[in-house]
Image (cartoon, rainbow, N blue to C red; front, side, top):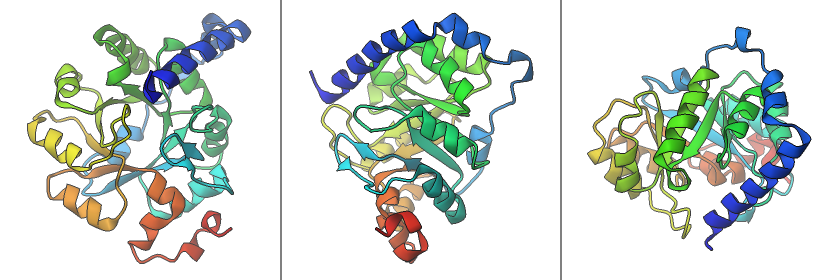
Length: 264
């Protein structure tokens, strides 16, 4: 069983426990369907020559602990001062040390649109995402079949949530070509082997002819990487580890001391 399979199995197990404490019917009853606001996540990325989705995460399976002095609210404010377009918040607890409380706290302290970054395998998580204040969810094509992608995207649209469908290869890209409302995210990291190559985004962009917003995810470490992707008409970038560690900011000529969470 590879790491992705382990994460999915753990997620499904914990969902069973969560549903015992709060059923999906009880969860849905907490939502105010009459006063849903339209998500502004997609709008924050549209028609921009450079849009950054900055990720907040304490750890990852590939990197281990990324931030020892982890302060998600302060990190969100740092990103906002840098001028990012949106935030991505890891809520997976076991492998990324995330928590839905981080998203709730950040939601209360920023007006930036927020992606809930997690491994969604059940409608329950989509309703939960709306309840905790997310503007967008992630649907990973490699862990969902076609029926699940359809049902989950419809649930997101009903809740006025934007959604990213994440792909890694040509086969997955072909599967989602008819999802006209989706934001398309290409993960440059193979979630089964954790190998990273930003040329994966370039390769898939060349064959993707639809009008969806197209995001390059993972492995973007510098201003140079962004410029390389922009040469291939890729203008939206999801950046995590290098921003959490501060390396990315330094490539823009910004001192680490400008960001309190980077100063131990």
